[in-house]
Length: 313
Length: 255
Image (cartoon, rainbow over all chains, first blue to last red; front, side, top):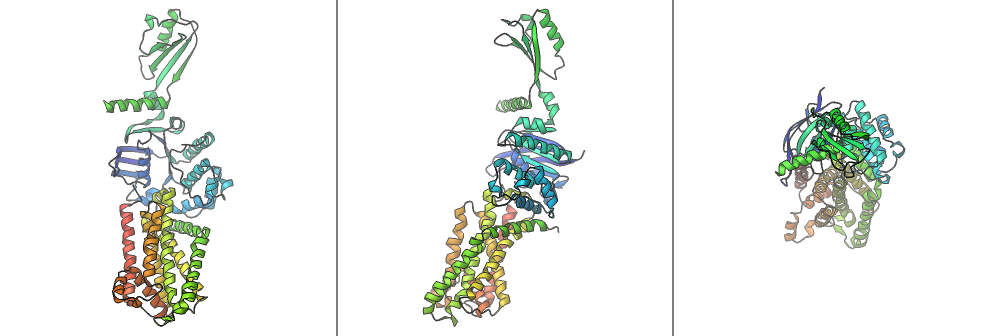
């Protein structure tokens, strides 16, 4: 697969001296959905803003489909659609006019049929003649997406697309991203909602203090870092953990009714069958058992915290 | 060279649509205030002043009045045009679009200048109701009208980029342009000033604009027509240079 976005040795230091990005290297394949995860102030928006031309990089190179975002900015930007984090709309314009304006701005000839399709896909068709100031926050967000799609970009940036958005719009947004993917559009989104990344992304990059500390396939990331938890619900409570069961990761709940075993899913030495046999041989009867895989959120928090600890040390 | 024609058109149409929405303040208000000037200076006070440089006073002030509106309206239209997207945040779209700085300027300044030119012609027509109109060099008159509109729209664009609050948008037109225009001979020939103040007046750039513009009407001049022309073109060149610098450095536009 060819790469539609290729970032090499990208640095950004603001005039204040704040280093927002440090040596970012990243390749994104065509048609991929990539989620950039990071806490507030980690550098997500700066990275997107540099790719889109809103912020100038200090050094490094960004290529969009082989075109340099600075030297070939016209060719590069034609391919990009951007939905920024903050709601910024022309309050006094109608939905139709503002979306048509965006298409023109990106150098495309008028095409009412495409604008109509985009507005219908985003449930904005009925509002097309309304002034933007009369719309709700969620609707304004949709308008911004419609503007970003108006010139049929091949790569769409969604900066915190569901911040402050209700559940139904969030669902719609996820569906939209899936549709875009089906049409071959590359989507790069930033979020600090892990469930969003988990729901939508093929690959995930984690950014912390301006550094891309990890980029991996979502499932691989979850496998690599995922912890599993096995819980045995006991028929009769135990007062103490029997000596035979003093294994790393195994603990007894406070009420004595649950045996909880936390283990690394990638650890080959773990043998659940053996553990269950041992429990049975000790005469401990369990009435139920269930396992839980840690979510991306837990992985993320662990990763960011451990990295922070390393840095502090 | 590739030209983003649709991009320029989008910005231009967007700005012109804004004028249509704000017709009262963009066109009607300046026409009313100009009419008031005619009534007050032309008829009421002007009737006591017989002539200025051999021209009836009412007719004499026509070019100055047009210039006054042209300068203030060009600046306020163009500065608001670019300041408002900065204020509302929609500037992100302009900055991330495949459009060159030159094309952005053509769109915004072109729209602001178009409004000013239309406004100038409307005021000219309005004045025909008050005084007998006479334009000796119509081509030069249009030349000054167009060049001045473009130059001051460009200055407005610069102010809009520089401003970081609504007060700053007002400061330059109110505290600099209006006084310079009043003192630049809108309502009198600088030849009526004492000789010391005549020399001071020559430091005022607006004197050259008004003098050149008035020459195109009546063939009379405070300063030589060639000097006016040279200065008018020089102002355009300076404002173009500043705009180029803004985009080269990303001043107040990019972080």
